[in-house]
Length: 95
Image (cartoon, rainbow, N blue to C red; front, side):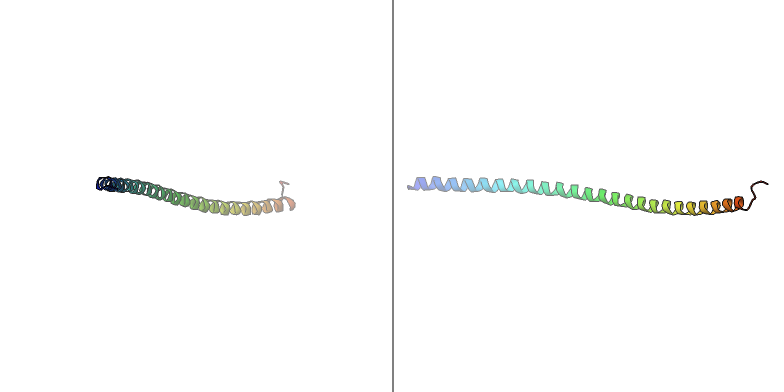
């Protein structure tokens, strides 16, 4: 290989190396942008999940209160039914 051919080969290798370095730099930028976008979406998703969790907790609390109110109402209806049954069974039905 002549000096000129060697110089051309070295120039080619250096040129390719420069192109690879440039391509890697671009890839690093793309990866960084993708990572940032993914992180932003993840953080937004976590925020939405926190909101959903709070809403579910509020619904559970509301359901528990509703069940307690229904239980009390059922107890009151049973007590009223017992009073009415006793009233009619004792012959106080208007006579």
